[in-house]
Image 1 (tube, rainbow, N blue to C red):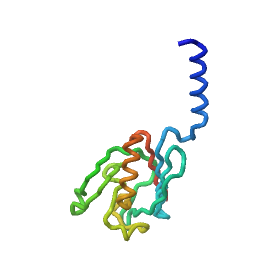
Image 2 (cartoon, one colour):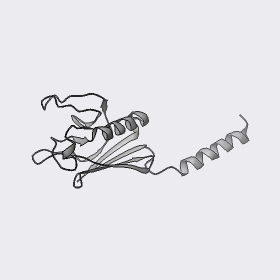
Image 3 (tube, rainbow, N blue to C red):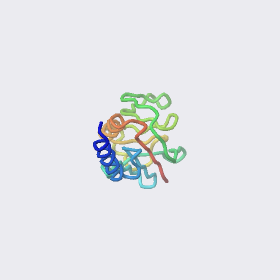
Image 4 (cartoon, one colour):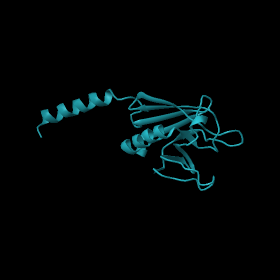
Length: 144
């Protein structure tokens, strides 16, 4: 490769990087606000989705902090809570996951045992985003 061609490619790459959002290491950014019972999903630094969630009810807890997904399970059933279906599970901290729920009427209220529940269609969308961009390129932040 000629030096001039190489330098041109290098310059183009530098321009591309300069235009990349600060959280470029996380192509998918998920922010869950426990007080609002809302999830915001940014893709490549752009706000893309905002959804109602259900998190831990009194007596249980949803962990706060920053996490990367550790496991994806399209079909999963709770081993603790009567084999409750957990479609499109994105595990992020031990047994805690973001997943679809059949209790759609309760979205927007804290009613879970600690997991983050979503409408099944939204859980599928998020699951596919994580699969597409990768667990290492997905950041989950949970705040009070």
